[in-house]
Length: 124
Image (cartoon, rainbow, N blue to C red):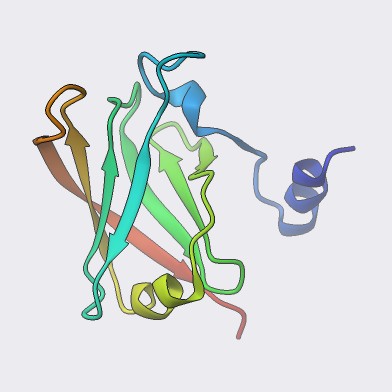
């Protein structure tokens, strides 16, 4: 049994899949680049260089583990796959949404963006 399976059973959440399975054009030579930026006012932006196959319906962020999950329109959960620092957690705790920005592959300029709700989790 994998660690993901064990955590899924403990938390009663479905297993978390790989985010790269959920975007177009990712292979051995074409990578998915994601960057999370947050300012001291709690405004959060997720920059990504590949379009998603399904809509991201909301994000979940766990303040205890600093883990950011993408929740898809069909209920699938995808881990961002990158560690977020404690300073990011400090500023994200007051956020309620994330701006997702798709960057152009060649120029790096923003092509499109949309706001997605954010749910914050923490142990009480």
